[in-house]
Image (cartoon, rainbow, N blue to C red; front, top):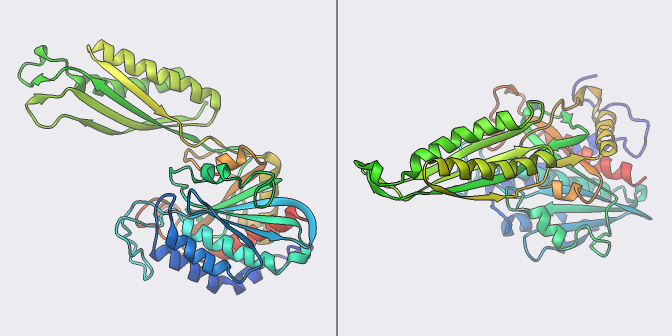
Length: 410
């Protein structure tokens, strides 16, 4: 069987989904490119929401607009009563200036869809079109969660606070929740997921080292915060390797250091900023305490003080084992066995779909989107301003979203 041929499917509910996704592919591509040309950042995405609502306007959906952000919730009622399944697509872009040379490249300087959220929106919208034509097969309802602010703005948390998961919300409490995330460094059309921890918690560490300024020629008359800050970077890395088991994934990166204004002045303060990634709540809590201790004690050793702030970011993304197995099985059934493979280890990136999975059993899977003329080993990754995705993979994403809903609402 060719790699991208549709397999024989005995279950009539799932048969023909890939071919149906191919039929609507021109619409999927058109919506994706419309959004890609006009990327928007954060929680307020008026042009993106307008494009989405235009695409959904002819479908039998109950549409709800968010108040605190540019979210959209669509509800598709099946022909028989039953549970609710949630499908999520995130919508926001990244603060990058695009350098892909694509004919539909971003028209907005400093803003680009470099993580594939434009593809996510288009795939979910087209899956709604497939499902609307199969309402007789749905016993329950599909809740389409179009979410802004995934890139560090806690958009899922905003939507949850507005009731997207509540019993009295737009569709009632979901019994299952699923999301796909495209990856430019996976073979196009392949699907990977795993049970349990899939992606890391991401916290931000900010440290201000306070000393006493003075003339650079007389450091003994000052209290220089710069060597204290430099020592702190090394001490933090040593702490990570000596206080956390080598078998427990944890990453601390100090990515931003700032101090002083010129060559002959010892500054009053120095500033450090970095990110902490962990895959267990126990290790996360342990490191929060130890980070504070190392920073404060290191500063004290240099006669300085340290003001330490740890900003809790997204929680750990944890896939429900049964839901992850269901996603994997459906990918094999709908796309074919050569298109699936288990993800061997978690990824230390973070994802705010974790907020949903903390409340509802479900799973997130990665969908390959490496263009066929590139190698996954050398392709530009997500978050690069040169990243390019294979639009053909959207056919598989549309079919997968639809299959997840049809399977959950038998």
